[in-house]
Image 1 (cartoon, one colour):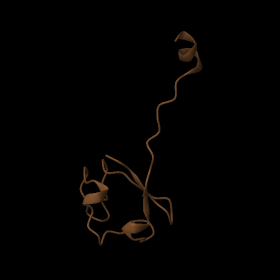
Image 2 (tube, rainbow, N blue to C red):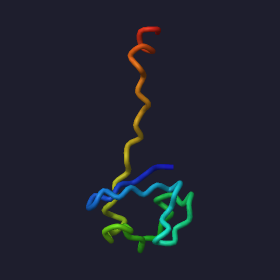
Image 3 (tube, helix red, strand yellow):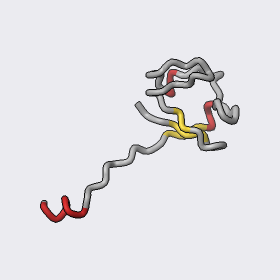
Length: 67
């Protein structure tokens, strides 16, 4: 599941964790959050969140030489 970042304060919504303050259970995807949900840190609305790009694991330079 994808993580989303609040553009106002930088809070990261992680669906694996959910939002205890907002009574959102773990494993709730961002798209399944209620439209009335707001950032638990700053109160920004859901529209002010942006999907985080997944980082690809970086290869060690030694691994690249072996290929």
